[in-house]
Image (tube, rainbow, N blue to C red; front, side, top):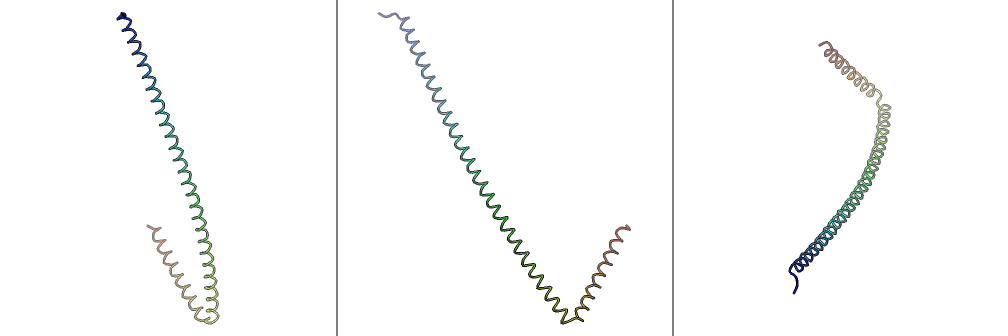
Length: 131
């Protein structure tokens, strides 16, 4: 016959070993889950970093292309303005050669109008300073 105290001690020892084993398995499972979570988070961060980097590269590329198009547009506009001013200069010279009296009268009228504006603004300006 077996001793009840020995049997109870063996049962308690077996139970303690079983609990210790279960606890170790739970710790290992938790560690694996935590490591998987950390690995997944690291992968997500790497993916986000890669996407952000790609987006920044596209943004820089698009900005450079836009700047080049803008410079080309300004260059084209300046060229067109230069051509138009040369055309106006030639047309004005031709008009003065063919209509010298009308040209002189128009120049005198424009000069008189400008002098009137200057006089008006100078009176208006000195009126504000006196107040």
